[in-house]
Image (tube, rainbow, N blue to C red):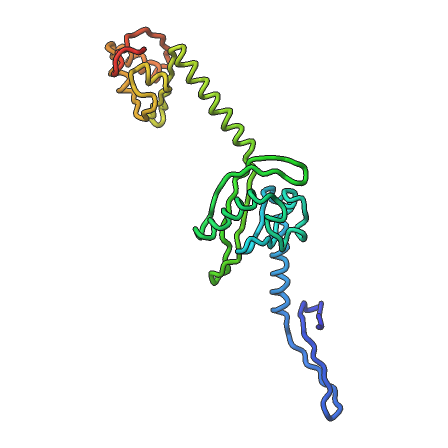
Length: 257
C-alpha cells in the first residue's frame, strides 16, 4: 500500500517479475475506498462515544439472547466489562427467574416486531444500587429486513416514581381535608374559558366527584340568587373587585351530607 500525503491519495501497489526478467509495478488507485473506510471508522467511533456517554443502560442481544454489545452503564449493572459480557446470556449473570423475565420480554418485542415497554426493579452488581427502570426493547434489523437482535434501553425512573407517589398522596390528603372541612374550590381560566372544580366542590353542588363535566352554568343553576353571584364574578373579572358572599346552594342531587 502506498500513500501520497501531498495529494491525499492512496494506491495499492502490485509488483511482479515477468518471465523475461523485467520487474513490473502496477498501481491501483484505492483513494475512494480508503476514504469510505475512514469515514465509516469515524462514524462508528462517534456512535460508540455517544452510546457510552448516555447514562441509560444500553445493550444489544442476538435473536437467541446472546449479548453482542453494551455500554458502560450496563457493565455496572452486571459488574463485568463488555468483552466479558459479549457472547454470554442473562443466565450467566442474574438468577433464573430474572433471566426468564428478561428473555420473555425479548421474545415479546421480536414477536410484536416493535417496541416492548415494561418496568422492572434492577439491582446493580457493581455497588448494590437498586432502582426502578423503564425498559424499552426494540427489534433491530438490517436494511434488507434480517433480524439482527433486540436493542434494549433502560432508564432509571426511581425518583420520578417517588415524586408521583408523593403527589398522589398529597392529593389524597388534600381531598380528605376538603371533605372533612366541607371546603371546595374552583378555577376559571380567562384565556380558555375552561372551568375546573375540586372533587369537594362538585360534591357540594350535588355532582358526582368523578364526573368530568362541571361548568359555570352547572354551578350557577344551583344558586337561587344567581344574578347577584354572577355580577360579583363579572366585577372580579372586569374590575378586579374581590368578593366574599354568602348565598344559598341547592345541590342538584339534594342536600349535602
